[in-house]
Image (cartoon, rainbow, N blue to C red):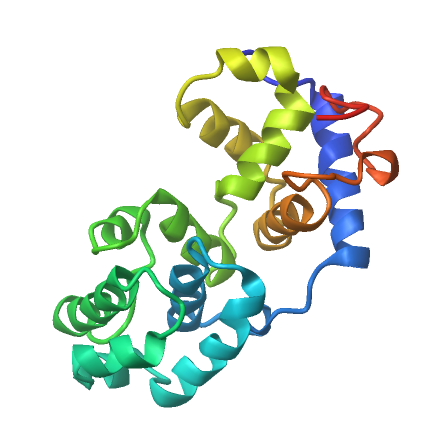
Length: 219
């Protein structure tokens, strides 16, 4: 796919960051840059609504405030505390990550993409989220909300039908991240997709992107 127009990219960056400054959600994991806490939030948020995650995130970190505390806990205890978030392979993987971090990295999460992605349950998205949100690297993230925003704004209905696989979206997301603003930009993209450019009833008439959105006046 052809790279987006530079002027449109700049407008998208500027308007999204301005929108985030006014509408960004106040979430507990945005008050930390600790890699372990970011990891816990990202694993919990997989296929789970934010509102359900917030209280469990706080409870989990009170019980297991460090990787070492989590690694030392019996896995069945971790699974019980995880309830009722569901998808119970997630606490098992998180427990395994904690143990591998102790064994291989001296009790800390690695800060390189390849090393992160070698651990169970950490794919490209989760690794990118840790690098962007814990280490403030200018790397892309691509979840369902981000993909929907990119699809609507840059591809539109007809072109989206011709896009196959994730590579095009990852490449586009990487192109869009403004230098030095990876943290805010990625958080903004996820919030925008979750609250405005949502799957149903998106707020198109109020959207700051509507002047250049390939899908406007409606998905």
